Image (cartoon, rainbow, N blue to C red; front, side):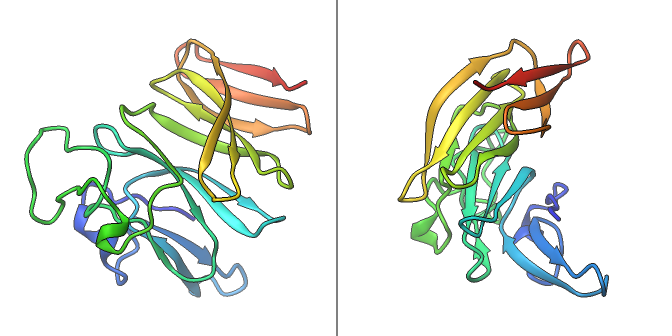
Length: 195
């Protein structure tokens, strides 16, 4: 389960608060949960690679700084929001509790596998092939579907992109070749077939 910071930015770094986290819930004992990662602004997509045992997530930055993050699930990972981000505050003002340093690792956080600045309005990410670590990434602002791959160094390589011309909110997989995307402006659904 993912939670945003709900504009309470400082809560994303507080382990006693559930805002700005990815958590694992025990379905048999619903009060039993575990923080998987923290320091999130607004996670949009989440996929688990069973073959390599990691989570890959997409996250809206502020103005710029949309991220793709990879969590190897070996320990709780901190992705830095609101201390670090490759975006800036919409109003351009500085905030002591949210300095948005343009570096993660220097401040003790995990760097994104990829960031987009300017932002693409990142939305969903869905697995195409777990073994080859390929994914489809959708976007709102860019109105594009990106075909991406996780490299051996666990960063993201854009293999191809397809301009759709509409904001793409979500994508679901039917089988190994067919995907359905939701288009916001039509509104409509579109079938995407990979060859």
